[in-house]
Image (cartoon, rainbow, N blue to C red):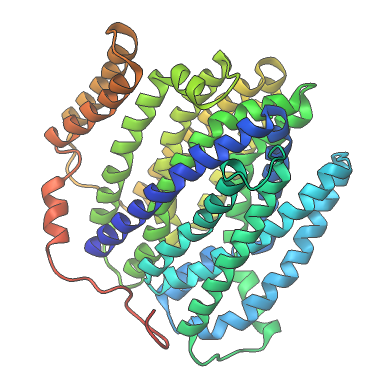
Length: 493
């Protein structure tokens, strides 16, 4: 399983490093610069609202389906037709809730029109994630990896033409950005449907009412978990836009730094997308997960700390380079959110392990407490500190949740992640930020060489201290040929 994890992780990272940084920092950032901070804040708050409520589109079905198909691949042919119909019904309920929330929040006509398109986009994205969950459950990770970047690749082409292709002389409009998302999701969804339908082979439908009842009962804890986590991750920008007189501007300011958090979060999420089906199958077979969890933790947390440290110390020149009219507050928000990212990354390891184990009650309790704490902190800090207060609330929430998840994993699953080697970790955690501070504030070096050195030096240090087990990774990768997937219901992709 370690070899399967490593080989597919390398493919996922390669594809996502090829596509998503350019999408986030090239396209998404350029769109904000083209339309302005206030107009992008207008879009970003509506987008966040659509994400907050999108659990209604899924009701935990995707996470449950990944775990279920990984444990019993034959369920794909049984579940596919019933879940497809159910997703359409849930989409209607989701649309009513989102538009109803828009009424309660006092949105105007322009906001309603954009919210309607974003609602449709969220439905397409949710259905795409469900289809991909079947491929992940079958351990067809390479196929899933390609689909994970297809929608962004299409959006890069479309938005790139609109921004720089000279096909229009009109100023770029935020609506074009939203419609480009619709087009890319439709194409990717059609491709994913054909691939999953091919894997399902002969459909063995069950009575839809009985299937839906069973699915709701089993997936409800997953649904609640996804809802609570989405809310404490995304509620900040909605509260900013509603609570402050200059709410759109503050939400746009927050979005500048949040974009980098979201970019790094995408890469951390790749670990979770691989680990959930792998952990689920290992637990079903009664295998220990300690070694894989420990390896995944080191592979994720060491680079996360290095990147976060570099972005913190070089925050102001970086934000000045990325955005027009960035302020000192932009850099401070970025620094705070980079600390929060460490909690996000750790949660993708320990939270995924608890989810695969079925420990959803304790996960939901932790998520509820996190949401309550996050909202309370935002209510106090947004009026006083604006977007900076939201960033502080997010940081405290993410770090607290990840620490509690680690404690719970150790107690429930008796997790042992190898012998304690405190000295290398202490040296790494002290020297990495020290190097960032020296390179950014003490020595007179141009930005790019200094930034590159603040990343390269800790990477070299982590290899010297053996925090990244380079020899072990090579040994695992050379241990034998690994075929994609372990089960096919019909034809191989």
